[in-house]
Amino acid sequence: DPEKLPAEILKFDNLSAAELLLQEGAPQDIINLYNYLNATEHTVRPDQMSALSLIRSHANTSFFDEQTDEGRILGGNDQLPKAFARALSGKILYQRPVRKIAHDKNSAEVWFEEGGKVQSIRTPWLVVAIPFSVLREIEIKPEFSPAKMKCIRELAYGQVMKIAMQYKKRFWDEKESLGQRVFTDTHLRRIYHMSIDQPGPRGILMSFTAADDAEMLGKLSEKERLKIALQEASKVWPEAPKFWEGGVSKYWNEDPWVKGSYSLSGVGQARDFLELARTAEGLIHFAGEHTTNESSMNGAIKSGVRVSEAIKKAAT
Image 1 (spheres, rainbow, N blue to C red):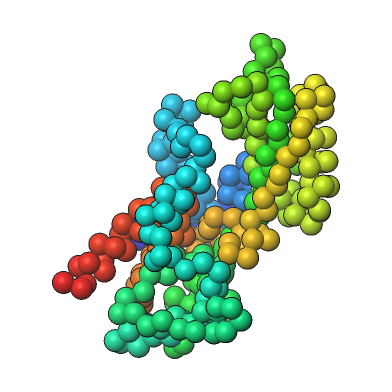
Image 2 (cartoon, rainbow, N blue to C red; image 1 turned 90 degrees about the vertical axis):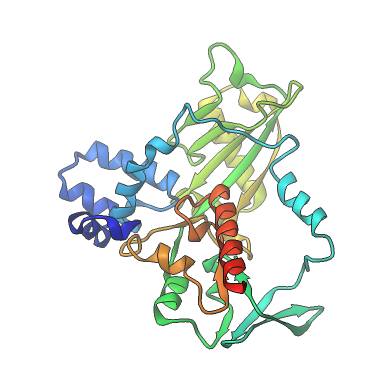
């Protein structure tokens, strides 16, 4: 909880991570390293991120390290939302973008588009799990509290792209290879082996590209992105081109339902925005990764539990 931190720590929220490094006399090579690491991990440059957020992230590094158990769902992590969809069949309405949220002290009403027509549904409770990068473009009537609206309109999001590259041979597992997880100074940034538990000779390398590199690649066509991916991967593994079979990219900033990376704390946002993001407005509750500390799938699930318990308590 940021409010429990001493004033001498909270003051760093008004500095960017880049300003903190300069202020503390960090040598240029350390600053250059942080420019790379911060842009990769937090999806923005250090000058765009709160120094307080950087300090907190370093304090929490013990929560995740190379010894942490990592897992994936057999058949793909998308099996989880697909399982929810099957279990809730008939209760989920697809292809109905929300256009307006109205509310009073007794109920909330959501206006959505269906088949070219705008319709609405009224409810005694409402959970909004829409990323603020999208919610800020939806009409809210009456508007929430000024502090909440400021958080919705200004919460920072970065640039992020992933490129999956399929090869007919897992050459990165060869004895003299660099291995399955590589940090690079190419446009691909981080490259991971994403088919570790899958049988067969083929394999998939996944790049995690963020910040300025993601924005640059995002302006290109799919064909151009994959061409650059192959070129950059060959700088790490010269043998890569002869095993190339194809790939696919995902640029979250061009996804109309996301419009950015996971959330982060911009300068002046680390102290108050988390609490503002998850605070209910009357009968309307808020969930999603942007309402947690983790900015992760785990955090999103925790937020759903938090909101369901809050509504259950308020309704009894």
